[in-house]
Structure formats: structure tokens, C-alpha cells
Image (cartoon, rainbow, N blue to C red; front, side, top):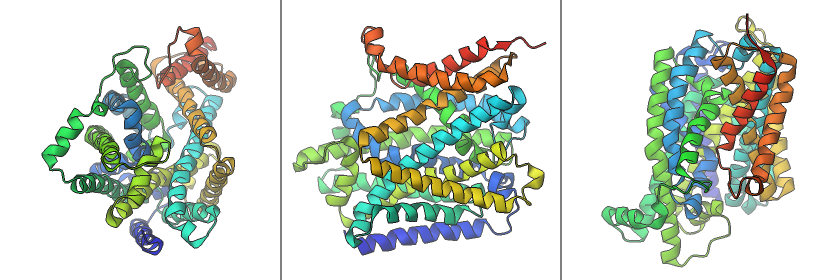
Amino acid sequence: MDPLLILLIIGGYFILLIAISWFTSKNNTAHSFYDGNRQSPWYLVAFGMIGASLSGVTFISVPGEVGNSNFYYFQMVLGYLVGYAIIAQILLPLYYKHNLISIYTYLDQRLGFWSYKSGAFFFLLSRVIGASFRLFLVASVLQLAIFDSYELPFWVAVVSAVLLIWLYTFRGGIKTIVWTDTLQTTFMLISVLMSIYFIKEDLNWSWSTLTSQVYNDSKSTIFNWDWQHSRNFFKQFFSGAFIAVVMTGLDQDMMQKNLTCRNLKESQKNIYWMSLSLIPVNLLFMVLGVLLYQFVELKGIVVPPGTDNLFPYLAIEHFSSIAGIAFLLGITAAAYSSADSALTALTTSFCIDFLNFKPHNFESKKQTKLMVHIGFSLLLIVVILFFKAINDQSVINSIFSVAGYTYGPLLGLFSFGIFTQRIVKDQWVPLICILAPVFCYLLSKYSSEWLNGYQFGFELLMLNGAFTFLGLWLISKKSR
């Protein structure tokens, strides 16, 4: 593909994002950056959150992972439905009742100062690593598709990627994100559909033949009943429920969008429709994965090692120019739909949770908010370049996995606050939140030796939350 053509198309895409930002940030109040003035249509939020839930990692990884684990990921997607129901019926009423902007202020009201700061800190840590990792992926793709042709270094791609986010979020904040997420979800879905269509046409299949080929492929197996397997149905299903609760319901990034809805009822409606939409969308990604492997086999194509390389390699090297460009727009949209809202959420959380911004002084703190927004943009650049300097995919994946451990303490903190009336010794809470992930890591590393071959999967999140809950119970007493 011609790098100049790719540059022009992606440049046009970002001009469209900036135009949306300009349109949505007109007549903004100081509150617009944080809560969108609580005027977002629920259906717009629901559609945009599909892209934010999937992210660039899912866009690349889920189709390729089908080669290793069939459709087992779909077991987790089914568990999401339970998790989102918990968010809609328990967490959202709590957030609207307390009129929260940063959801972690609940911990301050319920458990105390150090519990509050611990929860906010673990969110900041996990989101900085997660957003950097996703932007690292998209910067790597842009480097391959565009910047290498002009012999520009990787840091130019990184700075460009983060600068573009800053340009269309620094004024409108979450109000802009709600609209740009909608656009980005659209591009992401179009990209997947075009890829499926291209494969069908290139292999001269009808739609009925394509359906039959996917259905009869062993990779389309959904359920795994081997209890020792890390992809066992019950492990995947319940892990999916807890992952939805933690990575959506206890995540400032995702909840900030929900809290821009006009009222609790509309926010709940948004969650239910979004969760139902994720079923066909994720199924679409897995169908694409089966087709990619069949395409490689029938065409005799040798792909680079690593399942994450399958989709990008085929799209850029073997698909038509139109399909390749659609892929680049899709991966860019998928990565940015989670990264741009992460930057806004990081700024919001730091301003409210650590700089003690209050709604009555949002207007007077505009300059400070701008500096924080710039600061987190620079931090993302530094972390991405650190990933590049390591140049070791296994180490990067380990760092990303570590970020996943940080959600366990959030699960334990909120569960303890909501389901008990006990009072904790607040100064000991940070230690509990550190020890719980450490115990989980050790258990995961040595589980085969200690538990007769048992392998932990995503259920470690539940165990992490349980360790945190138990630790909080041990340092607590009954309320009067």
C-alpha cells in the first residue's frame, strides 16, 4: 500500500475527530470535561462503549487467539452479561445516589482517606500501563505502514499518536469522548465486516459456504468442560462476570461515560443494551479469526510467529488496498476509543482524587486541569518509549499482566464497602492492597506444583479480590 495514501486517509480521519471535538466543545461549561453536563443520550454512550470495551488489543488478539483456544473466549463474553447486570442494579444506583464524578470518592465516604487514595492510585497505575500498551500497538502499526517509508524514528509515531488524542480531548473532555467513541466504534465494525467480506470474495465462497466452513471448523468450539484447563467454562464464565464488574463498573474510564447520561434509568438502559451488543460483536471477531486461519491454509501463506501478528500481516500484505486501509482505520479507531477516554479519566481522577477539585471550583481550576492533561500525555509517551526500549514482547506482556492484578484490590475495596457495615483501620489498607496481588502472583506461578496440576486463568481476579476482602475483614471491627 502507498504510505502517502495511508497517511492522507488516516490524517483525514483525525481531522474528522478534531472537527467533532470543536463541535461538541462549543459553549462548554467547566463541568463538561468531567461529566458532560449529564446530557449524553444513552444510546450514543452504549454504542460508543462497544469500541471502548474491545480496544485495540482485542481487535488484534481475539481473531489470532482463535488458533490457540478456539471460541473459548465466548464463554467469558456470556459471563459479561451477569457482570453488567450487577453494575446496572448495584453500582450505578450507588454512584447516582452519591452524585459522584470520580467513583473512588465513594471509598472516602465509606472506608476512609487511605482506602480512597489506594483505590484511585491502583486505577491510575493500571490505566497508565493499559493505555500505553494499547497506544504502543497502534504506534507500531503506524510505524510499519507509514513512518518507516519516510525513515522517521519510532518516537515520532508515538508523539503524533498521543498529540492527536490531546488535541481533541483537552477542551471537551468526556463530552467529546462520547461522540468520538461512536465514530470509532463504527470504523472498527466496518473494518471487521470488510475483512470478512474480502476473504469470502477472494475464496469465491457464498455466504452459506462461509457459514458452513466456520461451523464445521474445530476452532469454532465454544465450550470447554475440562475443570483443570485454564479455559474451562465455569472459570471463563464467572471470570467474565467479575471482569465486567471490575474493568467497567469499578473503572473511572468506563463509568465516567455512563455517568454522563441524564439519569440513573437511562444509564442502566445504556449498560443493558451495550452488554447485549457485545455478544454478536465478539462473535464476529471470532468468526473472522477462523476465516483468517482458513485463508492462510488455502493460500499457503507463511505468517510471522505469534497469533497477534496474523490479522495485521494479512491485512497489510495480502488483502486488497481498500481492505488494508480499512484494517488500519479499524485498529486506529479501536486503540484510540479506549486510549482517548483513558487520558480524560486519568486527568479527572488525578484532579478530583489527588488535587481535591470540587464542582464549585472547576472553573477556577481550568489551568491546573490543562497542565495535568499535558502531564499525563507526556507520561504516556515516556511509558510507550520504555516499552520500545525493552524490545521484549514477553516482558511487555508481563508488565501488562501486572496491570491486571491492580483491579483485584478495587474489587475487594468496593465489595467490602458495599456488602458490610464494618469499619476498617484505614491506615493499614494500602498494605492489604499491595499484599493481595503479591499472594495471587505467587499462587499463579506455583499452582501446578502446589495444586496437583491446576492452572489458574482469569479467575485470579476473583481470588485477588477475595484476598483483599479477607485482609480488610481482619483489620476491621463492627460498626456501632
